Amino acid sequence: MLSSNVFQFDFDFDEWHGTHENDGEYLRPYNESIFNIRQHYKTVFPEEEFDPSEKEDGTSKVADSGKIYKIRYTINLLPILGNHILVDPVTKERHEVNADTKLMSTCTESEELSLFNAPSLQDVIQFKWDQYGFRHHMVGFCFHVL
Image 1 (tube, helix red, strand yellow):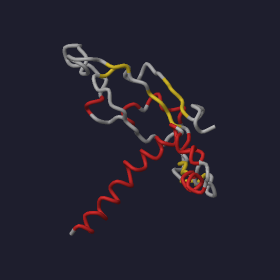
Image 2: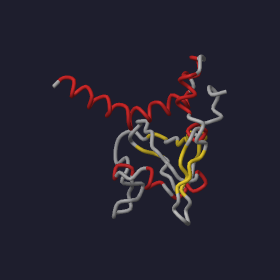
Image 3: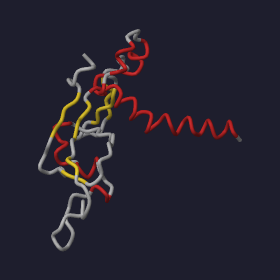
């Protein structure tokens, strides 16, 4: 089931930029309701490089020259299966959801190695490595070398 695309949702909003000269893949966190993502392009992509607005002369800031690529936006729904924190928008209280279910622990305790071939799980692992693991292990490596 994880190897299917059931946990990945492709979307296309007019408010989100549709083309770019950069063909890279970016994994970004989004911690609010997926029903509100339409208005959060600048939250997910705050860099000037991804600004979809126009220059003063009315031309696009993106892709002045060179090849232009179509952008595909995908939401990975797999992380919401494990424990996560929801913030009440009114009271700002934090509530832990699914405290007894930990996605990564469930995966590591499983004997099904094909589980790790699922694109949605590979994206989660890559994001966690980029955000937490690499920096942690690089600091340990530097202390070891010194």
